[in-house]
Image 1 (cartoon, rainbow over the protein chains, first blue to last red):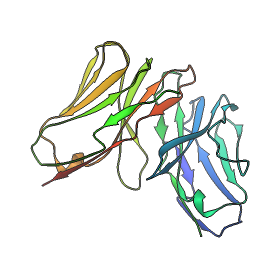
Image 2 (cartoon, helix red, strand yellow):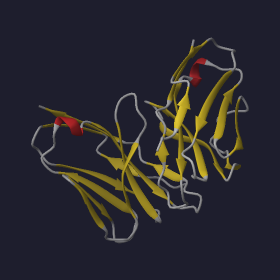
Image 3 (cartoon, rainbow over the protein chains, first blue to last red):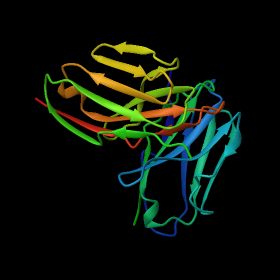
Image 4 (cartoon, each protein chain N blue to C red):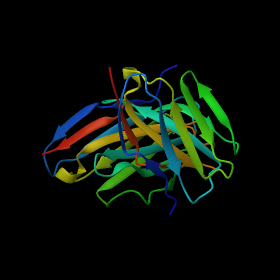
Length: 113
Length: 111
C-alpha cells in the first residue's frame, strides 16, 4: 500500500508568492494532520481534520495560512503571501483511528527567499 | 497545555553501547508513540504503548510505558550506527488522535 504522499518535495519561492502544498492520505484513514518542523521549534501541529472536517486550527500561525480537505483523499495547505520565516519542512500525516498512531509523509521542504 | 519533556536532547555514543531516552509529562495519555526520523524523511512509527506498565520489545529496542501513563522510556541495547536519527515520543489524548510531541532526542552512534 502507498503511504502518505506529499507534493512537491521541495519548493523554493520568493517572498510574497502564494505556496500550495498537497497531501494524499493513506486510503481509509479518517484523520489528517498538517505539521511544520524547524530546528528551533521542533514539530508543530498546524491543523487537523477528521472525516474531512477541520477540528482544530489553533496551531495555524497567521491568517496567511489556510488548509482545506475537499474529500477523503486530498488536502492542501496554502500560504499567501509567503514570508522567509515560513521556511521549514511541512509534513502531512494520517491516522486510521482515534488511537493516536499517525503515519507521516516524506515532507515538503519550503524555502522562501 | 500538555507538555512532553524528552531527555536527553543530544546523545553521542560509540557502537555497542547501551542508551536510554526518557519522555516525561504531568499529563495522563491514553497511548504513547515512539517515532524515529532520518534526515530528509518523515517520522516513522516504531511502537505504540497503551497500558500502564506495558513493555514492548522491537529487536534491540525496549519501550516502557509508566504505570500512571505519564511517562515512557526507550532503551537501545548494543547501539549500531544504523540507529542514528531523531527519536520522538508523542502522547495521545483526544479521540481524534491528536498527538503532543516531545522535543526529540538526536542520537548519533559512532562506528
